[in-house]
Amino acid sequence: MTTNLPMKFSHLPQSLPLDGAVRIELVEGVLIFRASSLVKGRIEALLIKQKEFALTPDEEKELDEYEELDDYLSLVNRMSRNRSS
Image (cartoon, rainbow, N blue to C red; front, side, top):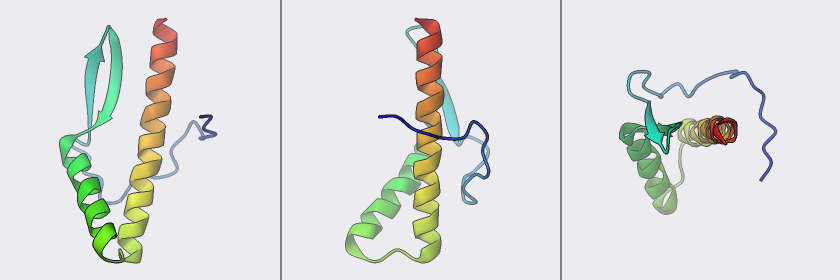
């Protein structure tokens, strides 16, 4: 999958807690960035709600922004892995 993401963030989700939002793991000598359990829990709660009810426009936007953040983290992780090989 090729992602055409800009290399600069234009925004972060408003509900993204800045402290502890992303954790860094060392995997086979490579730094890997992952969403924290707090962020994962919020995404899961939104997805569960989405299955049962319509999300509010703000919740839809929040979920979209988390998806965008996930795309950026994936990009950074791919770049990190590629540089280490």
